[in-house]
Length: 440
Image (cartoon, rainbow, N blue to C red; front, side, top):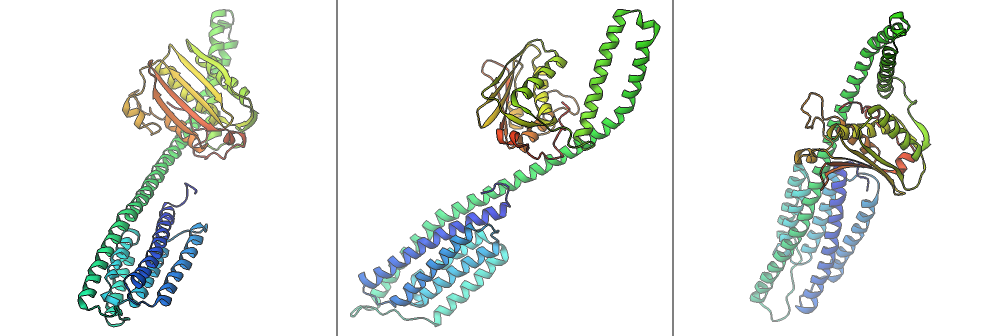
């Protein structure tokens, strides 16, 4: 079943399955009770009519089974109609077996309890009115029970008490089992709704981040262009051309300035200014090697360990989001542990596992519980805590998962697990998520 379907529809569909199970139990119980009373106790019952009602319940249940597998939604009104069918069948059985004098009339309360858990207020009160009218009607309209010859009122009263006890046991057991299961379904629905609300809030954060990044990129374009012109003039000025040391520094400045301009361009591309240019067909090993080489050459870590891709190579579709996702996790590890960063990439054939380890102080318990939530960081500066949040959103968009833990020997480890199918076929990244990975 699709986890992204309407949570109310999922809960209603599961509750319909519970009603179907309950109806199978009711049909079997009715057959057993009818035969026991008719054959064992010798009380003459209209077997043809009562068994016809059971057959009707079986047909309705088969139709409900088909309905539960139908792709359309299951509404609360549909559950209300299902309960009305059960009330109608119970009323017919009671009419044929003594009416209101039948001790099993208290099974109406079972229907009301189920309605109280499953239905909205108007439907519950409608069920109260309908069952009350049925009770009143059975007080005046019924088929009298024919007791065996020689049995008097004492035997009828004893039979009535025994029936009440059986009715109590049946109702209590069914309520304990099925209402508990219905409550679990409703709690699962509430959990799914809370997850959707959380995801909506995170998407809103990403939209704001994208707008901020796009605006900042536009603002930075002019001063970067001005600095490029000034730096080019310096490189041709007589005061600098004769100084090799100064020329080397100017070259380094030009390299860093070009990198800043590339970052600004990537932000604009990711925020929708130039769409469709980031995706590229390549091989997994080439993408990993290029990304790792670019990060290592630009950051120059003191000790960086990477043994290459483990497992088989394969063609993939990459874009800027994947590259920046890896950059963000590596940058966080380098900041926490400048003395050691280790990267491990493994292709299991079904999933791509990217694991980044460091020798830093590790994550606090609060950080591990809030993994992937925005603005949760130990760095204590404005805007921090967005790195893993954005990484988490990209991983989720790709259908993967993000895990983090503290290593026994010290330091932390962040693991990103992505399905290879998402990389092979180029999943449609959410435009509010794709590429907005620059930041802390």
